[in-house]
Length: 399
Image (cartoon, rainbow, N blue to C red; front, top):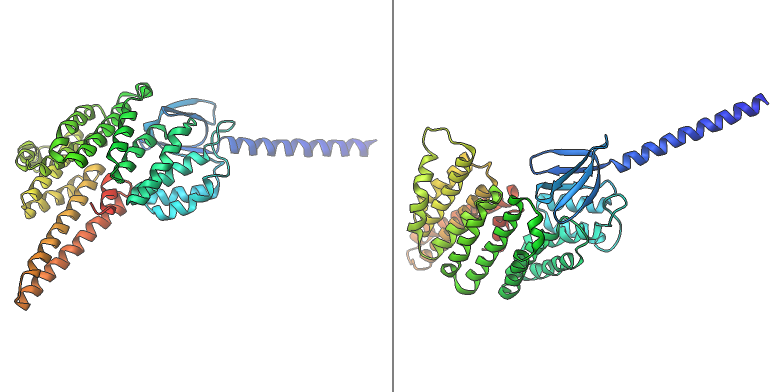
């Protein structure tokens, strides 16, 4: 009887031990997700409860539930995500878009990932990062494939946080295909989406400013930069309530369109005093520094338009040295530097072609090569440091 009792106790103890292990395993899986926020917060060991086009809800291990707006979410790592997806996402994050497309291919139509007990979002996630990779690679075929995937995400609308971003990506992909009519409709559809009203002001304004900027780019494609200025001014008026990066993007694009439209003098007039302040002794506030970075890029664009390459390079160098923490302006500065040296390369090559004296011709060809090397260097830095920026995408497309 005693042996039976001891055996029963042993079995019961084993069952309880196993139960504890299983409970711990379930808890580890349930609270194994990670969310990264725009302010730098990284909450690990959380459980994502749900995500939608406007918010993500997650629970801390202690039981506290938090809700954050989608634009404030940089990344979500689901514990139940397959290894191939994690590898593909990491390649996307690093800007290795060919590698991302290859790794994500197996996740497009199979597997599961998402909130515990919620929708399976693996296909949506894999499709979004694949589409964004193709958009960033540029070229008509990649943009066509990206547009197809973005359309699927928009049509599916399965409750992921990529809903509005996919609509914006669709417009940009169609623009990359030179499909002005399709791009215009995509941007207008996003602007007309009443669900934007449910977002915080900065997020709502950011999407609307970018979509309006997209319409300006459509007009520039169809009619030229001068006709696009009015729509870009509309984007600028919205961008004042957007995130600082979107505001900087719109301001710099406005300056670029003005220069292309022949008004380099107007851009210089708008930005010279602001850029001059950046070289003074007065300590500048964060917002002033951000505007100074934009002003220096705008001023450089104007000086490139006037072929004042020396001072343009001085402006761009100051952005890289003093204001490189402002990522949008820094990316734009590297793009303008790469474009500037490409212009010099073409000019030197043209000059060399018209020279008969061998020594003079050789010197021009050496200058052309040096300019080409510098152009490649700046574009390479841009793609390495800011691989997912609008400017890196343009550099890949040969813009």
